[in-house]
Image (cartoon, rainbow, N blue to C red):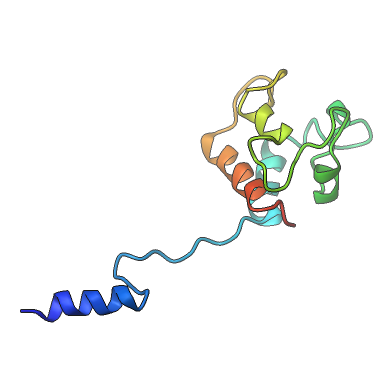
Length: 118
C-alpha cells in the first residue's frame, strides 16, 4: 500500500516526477518564425523596395530592421517593434487589414524572448 507514495517520492526527488514535462525546444528562426513571416509579412516586406524599408525574408534583415529602427530587440519581446506592430499596440498595425493569429504572435514573442537566435 505504501509502494505508490514511496515510488512517487523517489521519482520526484530524482527529478523524474510522473507529471514532469519534457523541456520545450528553443525557438528557432527557420522552424518557428520564418513560416509566420512567409505567410503574413513577406509579400510586403521583401524585394527591392520593402514596406518601411524592412525586409523580413532573411534572418540578418530582420535583425537589421528598417526605416523605424530595429524590428527585434533580442531578449525583449515586448519592447521589439515587430511585436508591438503585430499585437496592434503601435500604428500602423501589421498586417494592416487583419491581425495575426495568437499562435503566430506567440511564436514571434517566444523566439525574441529566447534571444532571437538563427
